[in-house]
Amino acid sequence: MERNERAIKQNQIEKDFSHIEEGKTKISVKDLNLFYGEKQALFGVSLDILEKEVTALIGPSGCGKSTFLRTLNRMNDLIDGVKIIGDIEIDHENIYKTTDVIKLRTKVGMVFQKPNLFPMSIFDNVAYGPRMQGIKNKKELNKIVEESLRGAAIWDEVKDRLKTSALGLSGGQQQRVCIARAIAMKPDVILMDEPTSALDPISTLKVEELISNMKKDYTIVIVTHNMQQAARISDKTAFFLNGEVIEYDTTDKIFSIPSDKRTEDYVTGRFG
Image (cartoon, rainbow, N blue to C red):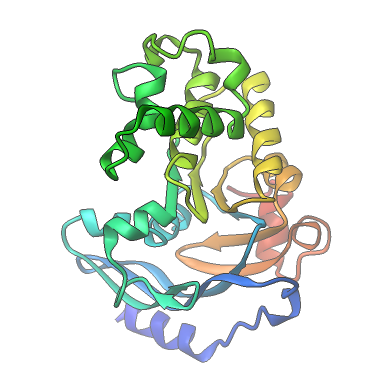
């Protein structure tokens, strides 16, 4: 009963985020609802994510932001009992109706909370995806690996040890190699689920600088618990609470003059 009442209430509220439109929409989400079995985790989420910007998803633990992030490359398909209602379009293509999942995950890369490198060399980690796509030419692979490591701002640190195990790198270096591995697939969109939460402050700063530089080439969506990080690196911010988007606006506005009291309470540390 409570779920039905909440769904009805959500359908009665038409959130309009058109006032923040500035660039070209890359990802359009409309009335997205997600269920884990009988439990509803996302309620009527609607927002547009703009091309070549950093969009931060903030909110307390369990609010649905990571669940939402995983809908953008259909990672939730891997969980039994998940049901999704609503529409997500990337470049005007509905990813739940017409898109091949393998093709989608090539176009939409992902970097996880903890570095998840394979137990192989730095070179082989970055070359893994292109090889799976059928690229075997050594010269071409060398070019892809170098360009990807440069794009992840770690080439100069690892260029003389490409054949050594990637697991021997520091945590911050491993995370940047994970970003290079995502770049190697030539995605349009990169999703990041708390990519610096396991890193020290210096490594965190390097990854933040990298993200800021990468937005000229990629659309980036990042989940973060770190309010300062969201304020530093993102162009737009969406505040999630209990599976709903409470407020979505320019990051400056979210952190200086939010429209909703719940947003203000969260970003000022009154809860969360």
